[in-house]
Image 1: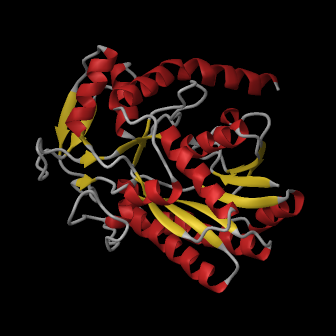
Image 2 (image 1 turned 90 degrees about the vertical axis):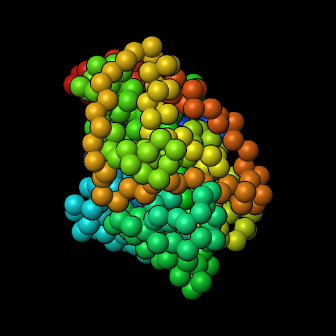
Length: 337
């Protein structure tokens, strides 16, 4: 039996593929390579280049592989872009996910792990945020993800189907073994942007908003190391295999760092100063998002190993330093092949 990983050629999905292969699972990856990379999918996994909105492609995957469960990572994730082009987000994140779920249910697949987001909470009244806090997303990205949670909830009531929706806070860092990291050139992740600025691959960086109601005026986020996040996915898979009920769980450490704190850490870790420009707030950015993480610890036994901002930044920096040579080798191999 195999696990289908949508978006498995990307940053977070790619780490899921590595973790599944590490424990001996059979893996099938579906990715349209719009932001992912074929070279990021290790040989033992099967890569299918395609779109989760393509019913025929999904039906072929389910017919040709014994898929036991789906780990669904494929999505668009840029909040300002979602504000500017909401229909794109409702198509890609919601409508296509609905299609994936429908075809999976028809194929008899009963286990589903969903990459949701802390953006479903909007501007929370209290931080850390409990899963019991009412969802109130303030941007189309968060709304598009919340809609998928609702679809999963309704399908689980109607069918023999169970799911775990993991609400990510800010994912950061890289595989501690150095096999993978955030590789999209124009990614908007703060640590990625700051590390690129330190390496001279960006002409400095912008800080969007310095007048938030936080100690230093910049946004505060809960930065979870990517391997800790993926460990939660493996626990979710085990939970579903054991017949566990559907769950919605936060994935974060329960404490946050401001934008200024992260930038200072990048400068300290790299030993490089770089220009930082102050800009106005971006549409759709809440002031603070910090996870209430007791439920995932209690229900799944999740125990993070990499809760250290300095190490997270160091991993991201080391990955960014070697990324050009990795992509060059991949390009050369593709040209020769």
